[in-house]
Amino acid sequence: MLPTERLSYSAITERPALKLPDGARMAVWVIVNIEEWDPKETMPRTVLTPPAGGAPMPDVPNWAWHEYGNRVGFWRMLKVLDQHGIKAVLAINGKAIATYEPIARAAHERGWEFVGHGFGQKNMQKVPDEREDIRKTKDAIRAFTGRDPRGWLGPGLTETWETPDILVEEGFDYVCDWVLDDEPVVLKTRTKPIVNIPYTQECNDVAMMLIQHHKASEYYDRAVDQFDQIYGDSEDSARVLALVVHPYIMGAPHRLKHFARVFDHIAQHKDVVYRTGGEIYDWFLGQRPDALAAPKP
Image (cartoon, rainbow, N blue to C red; front, side, top):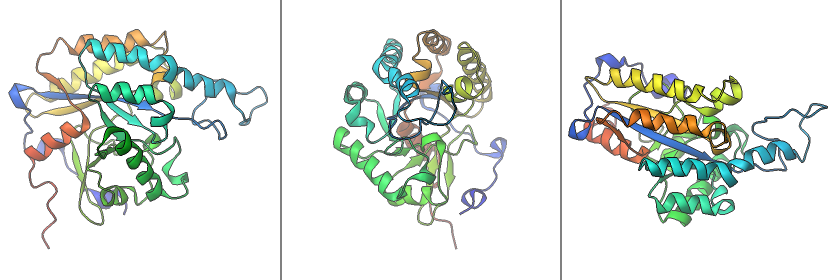
């Protein structure tokens, strides 16, 4: 199915208003991405170019650069989230649950939601069997948390032409790859629909720091500007803001304080709530009870 066959154009100004409980006007969800990089494969990202170019193996400096985030950076970020009482979402590679068990345990103990993020950190177009990869990820999360994951985030937001179809058939409620709205939207599949929860490429530390090469403070500046605009937009209908981080990026010593300052700003607004992806999904269906109904013939 083409993207334009999965959903029709919809102007956000022409939809019925969405309302959050207790007078809240905006929902924020924080997604922490935990990945396992295979040292036998080309690194998904690099910070240091080898002197002779190419993709040498083992690529120790770039593998170690990422590994720092899981060994040190995550725990800095966790302290910030704990200080603000934020229940975040852990988007995690299936095989990373065992490799980085203390991270998974810390998230589970705090009631974070686990979202499938591929079994390993590889484009979904490059895995040998997409359905098997999704199933293995789901099984790893279920084995650790005792429940199936409800949400899916493709590594690098990658999908094949069939990803939404397979996700529905494997029991997922929502996906995050379709970064095209500030409200949840419904995607058609070959069976029943799936919901896309608003994610972000703009307030995503990969885009800012590794691709656009901004200084560390850009995360704070952009997150606050994005928050302020969406907060204003939500005066008459609730909106959703995503904040996306990776421990090897925003957990670095020189960036952490800019991540922390974002939540100090949000705390000044008492009509903003933090939610997980599953909680946003449930709220949305409460507001749009017919959203997943099969289209009339």
